[in-house]
Image (cartoon, rainbow, N blue to C red; front, side, top):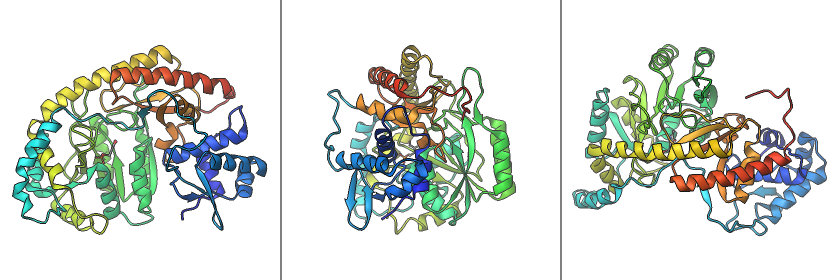
Length: 471
Ligand SMILES: Cc1ncc(COP(=O)(O)O)c(C=O)c1O
């Protein structure tokens, strides 16, 4: 059973206090860490005495917070194992469900593209060709690898089918790359804020993340990847792997400029770093062009999840043929291949993907603009980014209240992921990621409810110190 030390939990909790009851605030913050996936379900919590010492609280307060979590179904006491935190199997008692419909803004994704149903029917017609085989496919169907190679080639990156490996989505691709291309203890360059599951994948194989800051573009700042930090991170740590989202970075929406792309490639070559660019959201351009690919020595990761549908668990890796073979060999024993039918659907979709992307751009513009205007109207103190594509706004709240806001929002039936989930070390308490994948009406309702939640947390939070340091 995994266990959490008092100092790690203290670190994860960050600045958790508000002006209300300490036991409630502590219990709520521990619960949020669980709901956000920052504490794994089934983890043993530190002993009350040790946590009390780290947080400079009385043991009674910590005991009462644990008791509250126990009463609401999040903590069980196991004889000999102390207090174990886990997601409740059923709606916990005392956790009043709001009467209205829940709105989930924790995922940055869209519903299926309109063509997916028809394409799925057509793909069934292709299935008989494969039914006489065993169906375990570790590299990808020839027609899908060919179509993907053609798309890279059309984007300016000449690619052969044997330079493509089809995976179970981009997340699987990132995990596979981390496993195959790093050894425990290796440094891995990542972005902060960044995609939390990629960071989890790096940590899961014992990688040591080296964070490079990425800022959103705003009316007053160009944002993007901090050049000095990039230079310093490569030179100081010579990372084994570098993981970047240069096209519509999740969560900031930033796009890496051409000159910086060239420089990052130079640095990676100089310091022997395998560079991976995750282009999962790269095709979701709203205002301008789809960002171009990197040179062929950079490993590209792609996905059908945001363009077509997340329910099609299809992603891919574009790398040199030797790396592709090596990666295919590393798939078992974790999994034994990619579903054939899903691949056939995506292979059918790719020749007409540009039409799907054009429609996605129109849809996303309406959703992004609805969210921008509603937040602008109802929460004018929040600073909004300029986002030319992707699926989310990385909003500056002006106050370090992201986690309490996420907790309060749940009482109004809105689920959001607090800023610290996107950081390497729990920073970003002043930021909130707001995805705009939902329809405009749902987004407007979500913002109305968030405004209520914001009023609640502002009313109970201590006033900001004039000496607070901005992060
Ligand atoms: C940057 C990035 N990579 C990977 C993924 C996961 O993609 P998939 O659903 O294809 O596994 C996401 C999903 O949000 C993402 O934003």
